[in-house]
Structure formats: structure tokens, C-alpha cells
Image: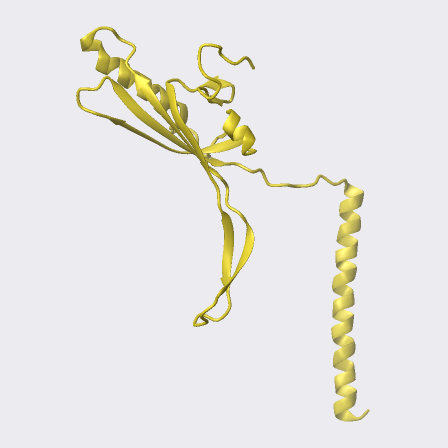
Length: 185
């Protein structure tokens, strides 16, 4: 991937290798821990148990400036650019959210490589030939899984079946001892 030389290093964001159009105003990343409260409801000092991290959120704000020199075409040019961004993400034919590979130095530093589109907000002010557009994404962390062969799967099933059999035998043995104790036989 080649970085454009006419913009500052932090002035670009790529989604699936395609640069998002507009002038990058800001990019922010948020993240927090997930914790659960434990203890009695009326206890004064509730303990908090940390159970992991939330997926990080990414917010990118762009300034979209009209590309037209003609006063009459300013509005049309601006809205075409907003519509192009809208069409990148709001595709009605897609039933499932799309995972995007994202590239920006801040995101690399925060270990974010893939995101899901969350929202697109835009605003314009009266008499101004520009529009602010904010895109929000959620970090996508794929589920971890392990591919195993048929022999390993059969072995795991056999050991699970043996474990269940041992549990049943243990319960039955305990039941038999209880009956002997009660009846004396």
C-alpha cells in the first residue's frame, strides 16, 4: 500500500484498501473493561469482577467540501459526496453486516484491524459549502476456533462419553451405599 505524499501521515483512513473521501478532521478510539457486580444487593461495598474488555469503538469525522466552483452546483456536488459515503455502508441488499479491514496509524497502535460499520451521521450549516460526516465502527474480533481431524474428534467424544459413564457409575454407587445403610443389608 502506498501512502499519499500530499497529505499528513494521519490524514487518511483506508477501508478494504480504499481511501474514504473527504478531509479527515479527527479519529478517536474508545475502549473499556467489562465488569460484573457481585455480592448481596444491599451490601455497601459491592465487589466488581473484571470479565474482559468491550470491543473498541472507532469514530471518524470528515469534512466534505464542495468540489464545484459554480455557486449553483455547490449543493449538488456536496450531496453527491455524502451520498457516495452513504452508499458505501447502507446497502439494503446485504442482510448481514460486512467486516471491513481498516488502516490508520492510530488504529494500528490500538491493535484494530477489522471493524463493523455502526452508524453514519452528517450535518451541514446554512451558508457553508461544507458538510461534516461522522462514521462509527465497532472493532470486530473473530471467534477463535481450532480445526481438528476426525480421529481427534472421535477421541474427544469417547473421553466425554467415558466421563459421563463414570459420573453415572459414581451416582449409582452412592445410591447403592445409601440403600445398604438405610436397610442394613
